Length: 293
Image 1 (spheres, helix red, strand yellow):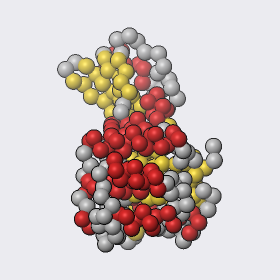
Image 2 (spheres, one colour):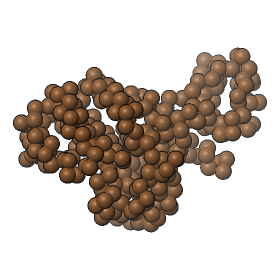
Image 3 (cartoon, helix red, strand yellow):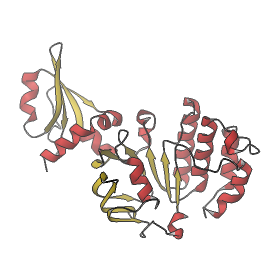
Image 4 (cartoon, one colour):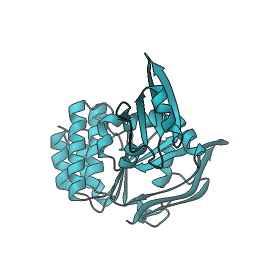
């Protein structure tokens, strides 16, 4: 597959503080990515560099084969929807419908009108008059209707209720199926949306901890529960991330990078970790991966 985004030894420092440590990875075209990490992990800084709003301190970034910073051609191929502040407060929604086609060559006005109706957004209202949930729905509408080859959503649904969020996920998947593009999600509502992810990127304290497809994560990070005497001999060729004993049961979470534990005794139970739990334990995962390099 062609690369949509390529980072080579990219770092970013601000006010003598390293926000992003040297990072190398690539994102393929036409995949849905989850960009995850706790607050302060460096997600927004990374997205701002990918979208050409910030220059890296070192290293290089290519988006669709070109440097994104100060590149009008590439900017037209990117739609970046943030938590807030996406549009001028004084504009009316109907004004946006007139302006946005000049920013996004693939703009789908019919889809935009359908989404405005779906989310009950009145086109005569100014941005400043919208509630937080309505403002989020407008951002989602623009992100989907832009049909930009690189579409990035950074916590896009603040203030939207669960039903509206589910509508968004359904429409996104439908649109992606009809016209694939590279979509990056940065969100804390991981359990809600993780079934959309094809690959997951986890940052921890500015470092890239994990970049894997979701199937690989399910196969390599899991918890074993049972008798400690029975489980301990199984752990020689895997990395133990953490363990605990509760009411006589031993539970150990492991990183089985080389798929050593394909066959288990019937008394040992295996639980695949949800993506959110993997992210929460990112620092332990990072330490485990360092030990097996």
